[in-house]
Length: 292
Ligand code: RIB
Image 1 (spheres, protein in one colour):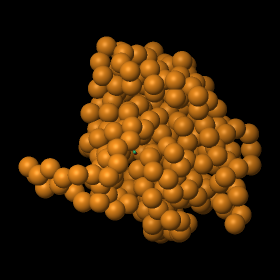
Image 2 (cartoon, helix red, strand yellow):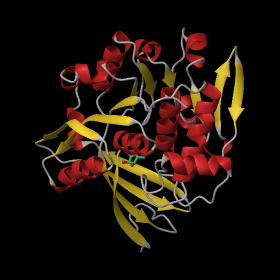
Image 3 (tube, protein in one colour):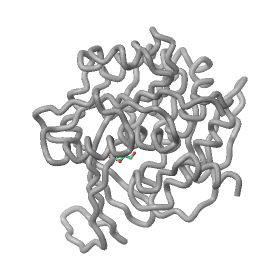
């Protein structure tokens, strides 16, 4: 494979507050859970950490609060080798994600807090950092105007753009037209409006389907890359791991099919441990897993 790509992530940084329970409470009910953990998370930060572990040169653009979580997240990202010189501390709370893990699945409520400060003007001030990247990855846990600005700057400068449309919201057609790849899961896919741009857009779609693998579309045909089978502990961050693996592989010059396969392997390994980032593998771990 080619050289380590320079990947910029414009996105969210959260502290994940994770409760593990074998049953879910009904509204108004109190139950006892099994375990509680606080883990670094946020779709942006997860993708940054996963990309760095895979050997990319990674810079993160985002915001944390002037609070304990903010300090911890900055320190953590630095310790993972992510350049945080474009992460600012703002007078708000760091984003949080309340995550319930039950029977190997999860549900999540994100309170964006400081992530809401990643506006168009904030991103514009980071223009040079985006313009000099090989790949930009964006998600939707920051204001849409921030995402749009980042994509616009990338497009103007020939930077490859991956849009991970999570959590899904209404997306303007010009944003969709400006990205190179859009990586929805099946739920998000049903919400993307294809009106008038279906043919052009479908060629950009990389559809992630969990245990069914990943599909891409060529000449109107769906091509599937099956998932790897592993013992799943927690799927939180699997999508982020796929996006990072896909980005790093593309950045190293792999063709689309191989990039999807590599992303699948990274995602599979990430699900074998509890927590979004805990199971995210290094490049050597992915190579060993694929060879086996
Ligand atoms: O994709 C997983 C992430 O979604 C979690 O880490 C949580 O922070 C939410 O943003």
